[in-house]
Image (cartoon, rainbow, N blue to C red; front, top):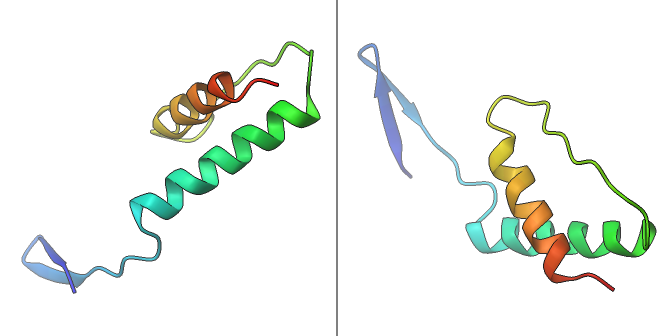
Length: 67
């Protein structure tokens, strides 16, 4: 199990989802958004800190799955 050290304290990290699982779910969400909002203009706004990384993947996948 990976660990990190911060201020002399060791923390054990647990991987809860692989990169492949996350990418698959983002593609599924993009496909569902494309289906639900077909033909509509969508504004995508990331509100969480560092959420732009998720949002860029989602918007990119949505564009590639347009119906």
